[in-house]
Amino acid sequence: MIVAAVDCGTNSIRLLVAERDPRTGLVTELARRSRIVRLGQDVGRTGRLAPEALGRTFAACEEFAEVIDALKVEQLAFVATSATRDVADRAGFFAGVERILGVVPQVISGDEEARLSYAGAVRSLPTGSGPRLVLDIGGGSTELVVGAGEVTAAVSLDIGSVRLTERHLADTEGSVDRITDGGVAAVRRDVETALGEGLARLPLESRPVLVGVGGSVTTLAAIHRATRQGVHGSRLGIDDVRAVSSHLLEGSRADRAAIEVIEPGRVDVISAGGLILLTVMERLGTPEVIVSTRGLLDGLVRRLVGRSVPTPSGL
Image (cartoon, rainbow, N blue to C red):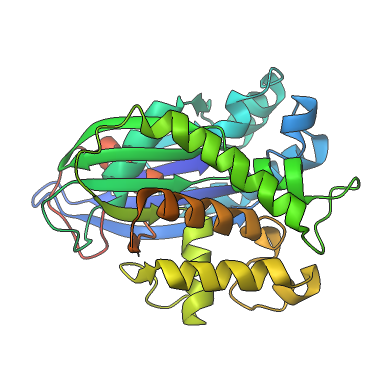
């Protein structure tokens, strides 16, 4: 059984194709792709999907369609998250995806996004058996999920790297060069406010193991390590996060673009992503975060194939 899942977020669109052996239940990853398309471009300001953002997203879908066809996928699921939740003009997006991939996107709630992220993130990680808090920093929203084997509670917060960048760090033309102290303070205030409301709804009686998911977290780990190799399962101490975040905030856009591990489409928003992670860790008093390159896609694939035997690939 070969299945595929597509996760279309505010900043990136990702594909995972996997095969389940019906005899053993083993699930093997066949392909994984990720493209930064910034579907949520200006959504916070206009409430609509920009034509150029749709064009980039559809181009990525065309590329994914070739992979899906070549691997003879039998079942495909396509989920859309924060950017699509926040707009009224979804019809053109739905029609374009259906035309290219033959499936209508499912716009999932923040709670569902959080639960899928948790299911995918904690697999194959040495997190122990105690409580875990999965932090999924996206472009439009950030999810916090508490669990110990199974999900106990989850919240979705309207803070994300794209949303906060456009709100506080970008200039009037939408570009981000030198970041001001005022912009940093404004991002911090928004994160603190959202956390104050969100953490009150989570049962955090003891300090959980923090697991970080999403492009911001994995990119921060890659910057710290100066390579994308070995990021999954690596650990970032709070001082590491603070140092990387400070380095990003002090430089210009050209300085950030010169860091090889930062994808071009993430250069403008990684500083806000770093501030979100740092503020969460400071607020929780968490000394380190375990980095996971798995997440929503992996959780969705596991749902498609049913519960199965864990594999080295983490599915």
